Length: 248
Image (cartoon, rainbow, N blue to C red; front, side, top):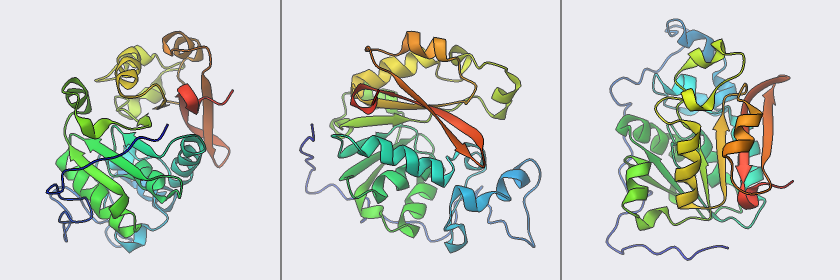
């Protein structure tokens, strides 16, 4: 299944691109003497569950505090995805790089393509990847992943795609059962349709209260695998796997 990866010789690699030396505007470095305001404070207190190497200079955007996948969960997802005929992965909404880094840390992974519309998030992700020593395995792209799909950008030729889309903020917790069609700005059916344009092998990282019956209806193929990943005996999120990533 692995595909050959070709690059223009004049195109700079991610390792060769400039990594910012100071945090971008809007990225605050919080400490015990300078803690963040609420509601960020709750997430900052869990900073080592987000990045075990936080004290080595990890950068997190204000949205990143709410959006990044806890490191142990990101590693479990990477292990699952790469325990298959997969060597190249697209992280379609990479944010500050939590999942991207764990994919790249896997010895089974040859290349990660990390896309996000937010330049500041990409700057943080590139910096964080350098902290973890995996910058040379990642290509970062600032842009709208769905526009790149429409343009048939050759950089998106990968073995599998991972999508951790925006959920509409922490307010998703107000729903007893989360309706995937209410996700903003991308409803569940749209995500599945777009993922299939990239690869038949894809994973969606969704709210833990997502409707399993709804997921079964929108996912293609006869086999779908849904896994709850827990931290401290509490589900953090639900990841749904399709194609060769479904192992049921």
